[in-house]
Image 1 (spheres, helix red, strand yellow):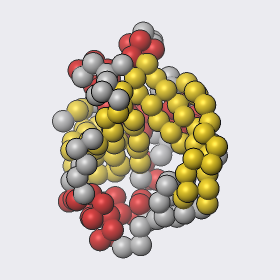
Image 2 (image 1 turned 90 degrees about the vertical axis):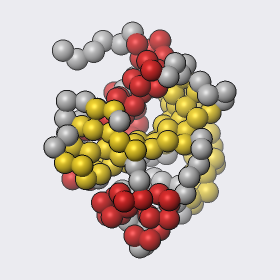
Image 3 (image 1 turned 30 degrees about the vertical axis):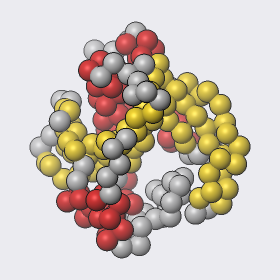
Image 4 (image 1 turned 120 degrees about the horizontal axis):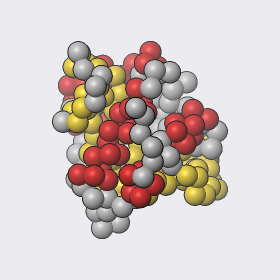
Length: 175
């Protein structure tokens, strides 16, 4: 488990499907995802039940409540020292710094505890909010892959963002 002053990050499980289904079924929230919104909670349960040894996923909860309000997923890439990161946060919790705090805690763990050298994320170039969040966390735009994804909204480009350990560990921390 990872924790901050106001958040807890614990392993996400099948039991979190009901709490996260409203977000995964929200057509606006899912616009930029590679898959269409979920139609029924059984899709969410099935997705959460699948295990992939190369991916870990932490449920984001408030410190005083164990109900999942989002998650941060990390996929191990390239000899276990480079990771891809993804995230989702329920709409009622937007605009309060929760995503930045949760993702920051996971990134800190990857660099400091696990010795990762690089974390990257890919997002749709039109996903302005995700791109701003990555920028606030110190990620740098490294390139755009044209026509990279075939999604529920058509063929889409992807914007690749990267963060190196030295960029993270040397950045100023809030007081």
